[in-house]
Length: 449
Image 1: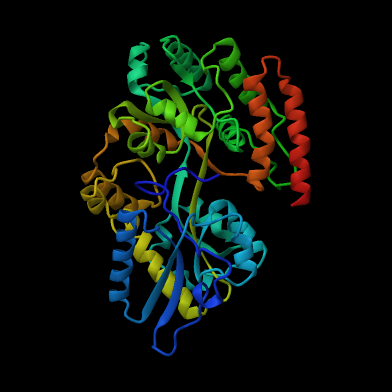
Image 2 (image 1 turned 90 degrees about the vertical axis):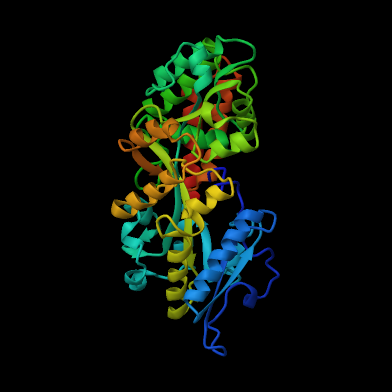
């Protein structure tokens, strides 16, 4: 699943709005009549996101001024990638020349033969060697590169420093193991007044998403390395469900209301009634701007367990019909818009600060080496949130294995939703049988894919 926010403010994504649009409105050829190379791109923020829209248009205009031989036509709508129309747009020739994808869809686009091979042109993308290898690898298939990462996120543990202090816990020492999470959640719940120690999702595929993240944190995996068999019926999978069951029924630290989704949990945290939950860093501004939270109260720790964390994100791929000139133009545009440390649509932290957008959150962490140093220096210089609250997350992430979501993620999450919701709503849930049943269903999904 994707994380819940789009860069600094809120989710503001775009695609061509209708499959009825003609091919000239989305995919396009070189505009030879004007002597320019014309490219269509998507994921322009919609007009309702006024600040982001203005930034995007400003940066695109500056790109065209620097590259007068390139004409960029941007399309907006919501969301950037609509699962209901994505494959149809690809098959129908309606996709833009440079189009947005979630990490989880990269391999699928390649497998159905709809992506241009960018490998021969990578030397022209100045920023490419500076991007984290684990993110580059997501768009690499059989040694060929078919896409460019734009952002990445990893899951961590958001916690309320004020509740930690009230419960006699050290807010500068967040729990590092699931046993510690359980112990801290029990103490926070004991504060009473409707306070919940730890909350988790268990509906709308979100429970399966978090089961996966928790399984990674224990060192487990959802499917085998060859992608053919489920691997949830394991000691690690059992530990995930047993821990949730015990916090819910033995400790009573998760509250009585279950079958929660992300908005429910964010409301709890924003109201100051929740001690901890799993999320990516982009939840923090949502908690403040939309749910009533305060930056000083909210801190972020790495995933408990110390073994791994779930990562996600997005990037751009290129239409298989693109000409070499369009590919070169698109790569230049990506460099300008998203891949210049401390500058561009995602990296101009000074501009973001001027418009009261949060600067200083620990992600996206896209670059490595000197590029990362520069990006972090500019971010730190313009920070307007308490960056010290996120240091544990930054330090701890260095030791974790970063793992992408499983294949057929949404179908698998739907299956795992049932296991998570069962242990949170039925005191006598049979964990062993739940995992056996889930494994069989996941095996069937993998066999059909």
